[in-house]
Length: 443
Image (tube, rainbow, N blue to C red; front, side):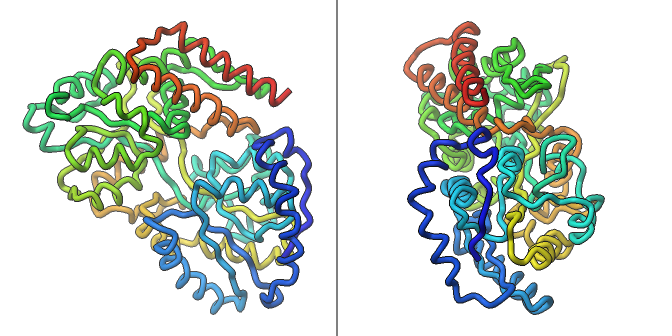
C-alpha cells in the first residue's frame, strides 16, 4: 500500500542529500504500489539482512511469516534488504511515500528516524497490543527513541561487542585472556611477528561504521560524552581525543595491527584474518561466530572476553547497545495487523528461532540466548549487553556523528598506514572538522 508520509523534520534530522535526491527518482513508485495485487489487509515488511545471504534470511523468515498468516489470516509480502541499501531505502520511503507497513532499522538510527515524524508512536495502547514494554530488556528498550519521548521502534535483535582471542596462540605464549587495555596491548605485542605475517590484532580500520563505534566506546571508557545535553556535538573533548588516539596507536605506535587493515572496509576481512591464524585477537559483535566458523575455525579454538578498558578507567563500557529494531510507518493502512506482526516476531518462541539462526542476543527479559551452545561465551555477551553496554548518542544527529567521525578515523588510519604518526593535536584537529560539519548541519 502506498502511504502519504510527512517530510517534517527529516531535512534537519539526517541523510539530507541522499534523501532529497531520491524524491524525484522514486516518486513514481508510489503509484505502482497503489495498484499492487495484494489482498486487503496484507502487510509489506522490509527485513534487514541478518544471515549469510538474503536467501538464507528468506529461508528463515518465510516459515515464520507463513505461521503468522495461518494464525491471523494476514498475508505478509516480505523483502530482505542488505545493509548497504537499507538506510537509503528507508530515507527514500520517508520522502517519497512509497513505504512498507513494517520495517527493520539499525537501532542506532532510531532517534534520527523518530525525528522525521514518519513512524508510528508506540504509546500505551500500541505497547499493550505487542505485549507490553516490560517484556523487553531495559538496555534494548533504551535504543528505541530519544529519552523522555514515546518510542517509535521496538527491539527485535540484540548484539554486543566482545574481544575474541585464539586459545592456542595464547596457550603457546603462556598468556591469559586480557582483562585491561594494557594487558590486551601487551599480549598483542608478544603475539605479533610481521616476518610470519602474524599480528596481535586485526581491525576493520577502513570501515567508518566500525570506527565510529570504537570512537564511542573508547570515549565512554574515558568518561566522555559525544553530545551535550542540548544535542550539540562535543567531539574535541580530551576523553574523545585520548580514546581515539589509543585506538589509532594499535597500528601506529604499538604496531600490533597490520597497516593493510586500513583498507578493511568491513568486519569480514578482520574476522577472516583471525580465523586463518593471521591475527590473535579481533573485536567483533557476537554474530561474528558464523563467519569465524565459516572460515574453518571451530568453537573450541577461540574464547571471548569483554572488550577491556584501561586500568583505572572511569568507566568500563565494553560495547554500545547494538542491534536491530522494528518500526511501523505511521500511515499504515493496517495498524492493528502491523502491531500483530510486531507482537508475533517479539514473542519468546520466534525470538529463540531467530536468535539461533541469525546469531543474535535475546531482547526479552528472562530468555536464554540461542546463538551459541558455548555457555561461557553466551554468559559473557549477555553480561556485556545487559550491564556494560550504552546506547550510542540518542540525538537526531547520531547518524551524522557516525559518518563524520567514522570517516575522519578512516582518513587517519590511512595516514598512519603510509607512515604518518599522529599526535593528540592532529586527532583533535580532525575531530574539530567533523564537529564543525555536524554543527553546521543541525544549525
